[in-house]
Image (cartoon, rainbow, N blue to C red; front, side, top):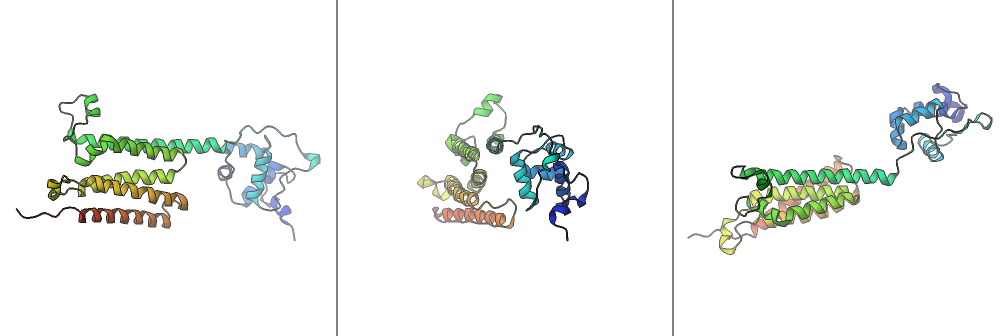
Length: 266
């Protein structure tokens, strides 16, 4: 019975003593395309193509990665008497730190855009009549905005955006996403479910700020859990987490409303 080393070459497409031919045969045996293999190695598809055609030679680090992917016994080095002079790899790997920073920066940029859209959407309610563009963008007078939106403009919105973006830049992208979701969910629940006219005599005619604050704090705890467990997005575990988050927000809303003053007859 032939050993695995002899079975490498049944896929055809290369000299069995040639490293490029071995890579091609093993790749096909594994059912991988050049693109898929390149993704696992974190190199370009062109780099894999040049290895297989003999135009360049994998670095030692890439050879070790290839051995891990192809399994035990994957001797990719050519026979000593036939080994070509290695050519420099024209497609060096991206440093993991640089790649991670770019991903974090992209996530932070998306989060900032979400907050910016929220900022602009909240201003649509006052219209443009009587405002210059600059005046519309900077208007902060009390009474012209919905209660909770105006309250957030005075500090909560900017602080939340900074905290969310900072978490993303530090690589805590799941936490950052949870904080952003908590901010938006807390606003919707607080703005539309926070009115308590019976509390006006007590200076609490609107408890939207309390609802928003409770949900926002909940988002930190839920985000820390998601960051620790690393649930894949849209997996069953992720949807269970999301359901728990939503249920917690609704419970907070009910508790705050139950603690609000009760209307009394005149």
